[in-house]
Length: 347
Image (tube, rainbow, N blue to C red; front, side, top):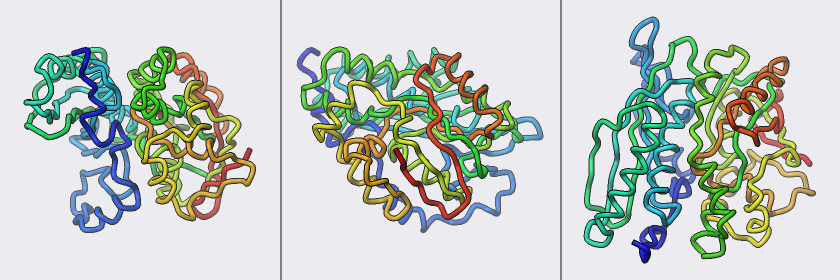
């Protein structure tokens, strides 16, 4: 087990494996429209975090799936990160998770059985912490290790938190610090120390349970989680859904301390360049914003934080709730504004 390096068995890792947003949008154009299903409250139209289907006047089913290749070498930690990331989509819709199924693809003749067992145990430990059963799943023999979950949850149909309902003037609150993909790349290169690894694990295994609490707050107009498309990619989806622009104050962004130096050295996943290329004219940086900070804003976050668009009069209360729930780095980073779906980054 000591000789196993999961990240060397795959060509990518974590949410950095995701297909670039522009390419994904082209792929999805061929899908049939879902408007013929009136009880489907949230489908693919706004690239939201999960599908939501109304069961009755009091309950809607939240359904999502998320899986990827290893972002860390430790099998147990990989399982924990992948499970936390998948369940986050339920919280991002304001839902309460109720059930999970495992998605397992393993190179069974390359990876020791003990390592596979540890991956599954890590995922199960997170499901237990979330208070849900890991009730089954599906497995295949695959050339690269893949693990994730199908996650199901419930939410009141009137309390669904979409990524498309932000309003002019809303304050943007980010729940976790940025730089996860950069730390993962540093680990793969063998230059991440124990403190940096601790920062990586602590943030990627923190469940976004605050989402359930935010569901009850009417002034939380929109909610999404920041994952593979980076902060800017997921904020751009929020802007396009609401047909509004956004301003980000770069100096207010919460950052993982260990990621800053690596970003300044140019260390990071290939997803950063893919994400930046996909944003096109949708993102405008002030000239003073350094390249390393631009990279962090486009860094593929695995199991990243929730991004909330909140009415100004409730922003302080919502931020206090983030802090009270253990999201100590949560910060107000900008606001929504009238205009074209464009993100302007200022100092």
